[in-house]
Image 1 (cartoon, rainbow, N blue to C red):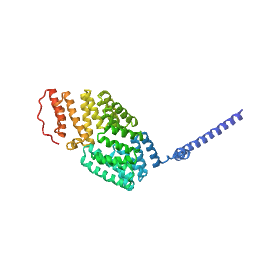
Image 2 (cartoon, rainbow, N blue to C red):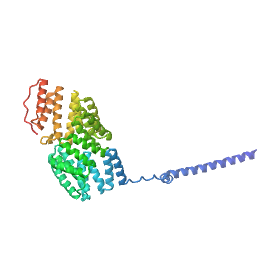
Image 3 (cartoon, one colour):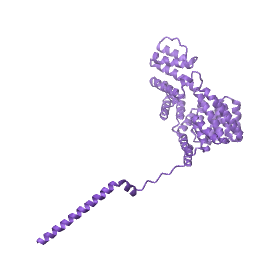
Image 4 (cartoon, helix red, strand yellow):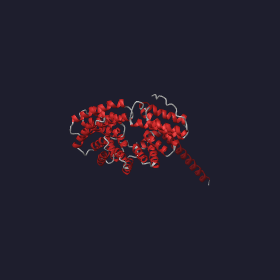
Length: 420
């Protein structure tokens, strides 16, 4: 009995000793793992597979797909990525310049087209697209009251366009872009001559038909312009800009169903195209469907809160619906955006353009809205006076101002001598 007890105690001692040794080993392993955890992790976990670097060609393919779908902004962004990898790709620069002009990014269009010509001075496509870029930028400057800056751009467009024609007399776009430039300069004889040469060379080029439409539109031939724009759309059915040009001619012709259909199509092709919503909303306004106009124009400023044109049209719509308070607030914002865009209050004193005419209407209508709100002295009168500073002899502004006095029963003050 004693021997059995003795052996049991020996076994327990040996078992306890083994546990202690095992525990010490485990503790040592744990300390080692903690001390070397980063190295062990790298050995045990394989590093992530590196992401393949995209090529310029992949961005070009992406841009072409986006362009085909009508997403011009997306296409431009992809082309920018491509040119960052291949800065001497002339074909990409040419396409970028064309799209930027259509997207109203005319200054950037000039820069890209100039790059293309610097890289390939004998490339007729580069010379032609530079003609287009200069012309469209000049037109943009002129629309924003910057006539002095527009003239040298028109001059460059003519010079480069003639260079392009001399380089390759068989390239139709050179003649088309020259025709647009002459149309902008009201030189109808040259505009008609050059666009006809473009058509004779190849009538199945989208820019040839677009230029033909533009020349006809500039001369007041709106039905002929619509016909040319329709042919251009057949050649490039996903280019939202063409629907915009076509819709404007339908609106002038008072073909309301076609104008609505065409502008709507532009918004469907490119849901980020604020000008399409603006034109669609203004068409409903012209039809006196003010409720629908307001809906579309509010959508326009959701798409682009910085669009002064859409805000100005929305303000007019609020006024037509007798929402005078929202009209004044929206007109103020539209005028603020116009001044941010092209310093309208300054330029429009000496310049004459459609944008400046709209500025005068904005001040005059805003003043009229303030009259209905009974805020003459502090709000209406300064708005009328601002309009008269820009257009001192505008009979419409003076008539509206007189009506305001009649509505409020206030005496007509002596109009101060307008000063810039």
